[in-house]
Image (tube, one colour):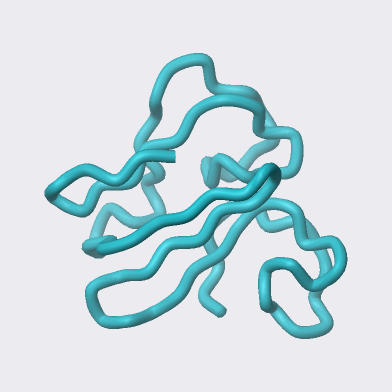
Length: 87
């Protein structure tokens, strides 16, 4: 997971739980823009083994990837999120 100076988020690698944020569970062998943030400016990101987090300039928190054990912070929705979802 990478964040550029202009607030663009890029991801690549294994995508088995949707942790790349591209709407699928495919692997990406080269960096690909996370298009869900095309109209927003991301100011911070973090990545775990199977999940990612982003904070936008307006303070919103988004998570995606493996939802098991409530890791994504979406309450009782423990499903994997293939796209960034607001917490």
